[in-house]
Image 1 (cartoon, rainbow, N blue to C red):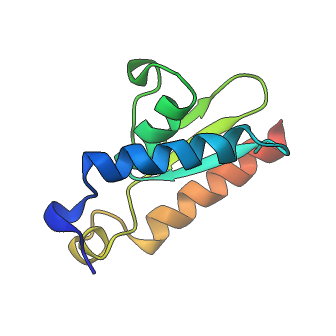
Image 2 (cartoon, rainbow, N blue to C red):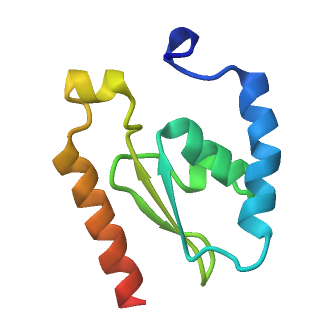
Amino acid sequence: CVPPQNKPTGAEIATCRRFLQTEILAPPRPRAILALGRIAHDSTLRALGLRLAAYPFGHGAMHEIGPDLVLASSYHCSRYNMNTGRLTETMLDHVLLALRRHLDAR
């Protein structure tokens, strides 16, 4: 089902962020996070206590978050984005391949 206005409420985002923060900070720490959509991207940065302006969202964006973590971002793979062509399978594949290459180069 599609949430109202095609996105979660602020309260839902805040509730999830607590769990996200726990997952990110618990060992073993992730080497990479793939944020699917701006909400996930911004929530990840907020969970880490980072400024959003320092790590702008963009499809295919890769941000080094300290020496051991990379944040990769993509448009969300929602039915709306896929049906309108905002995101295609090829576009998502390119982000995944770029992230793999980025991690392999570290």
